[in-house]
Image (tube, rainbow, N blue to C red):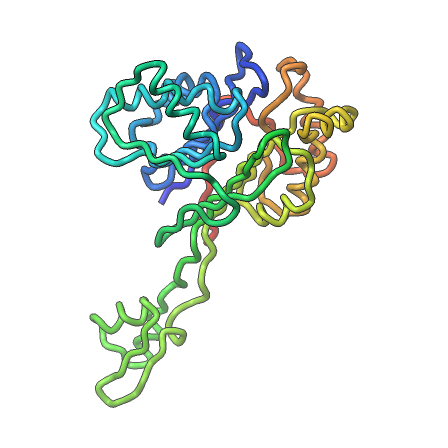
Length: 307
């Protein structure tokens, strides 16, 4: 089962020729989840040939233009195809007001249901296979970070052990794999734990942008396979970063190190840095956390199963 992350835009404040405004997408087993929707999101989706009409949910971090200006166009674009399922959008309290105003003023043709929910700290979505949760950040407006995490999977079924215990091939094997205890013909009970290996962890993706440094972020994104995190300024601008409630690349790296994530990809760069100057952000981050990469527009990451 695939779990891919696509960076759609890496610029903060304003779009640049090679940097659209902040946005990212997760594709898991064919389902699409969009995180923020800055200007240029549709362009990256088209260039990556992602099937945007299958977007299941959208998660908006906060109500600043560089994170929501691509949303009206995305909503109108989705009306150009047949869509039976509603589109669920999570975000701050005023998000619904913003969407309703755009629909009214632009006289949008929308032929599907849009459900807008306020993203409060805690679990937002919980299915049999994964959950998506929100946690608070510290910005100039209410802002949320998001975590998408797969539930633990059952361990590997030990066929040889089942045979040794005399469990016949058939429905009883299925019951054991579902965690049930079975009774054999001779009256013996065989428990699931006797034939099943240890549970296997799922994959975890975290999305953090537009926040001052908070030690608590590390706990929320703990052991992520991939952390997309803003690194808006170089470390020599830490005071400016805090005044604007943003993080330096070094602070993003500190979060990654404390959280023991597998990989960190920086995003949401200040437009003050040209493309060639982004190497200074990377240098600052890698001094603290080696497995750091510069996120680039349309870069993708594959999150393989751990075991």
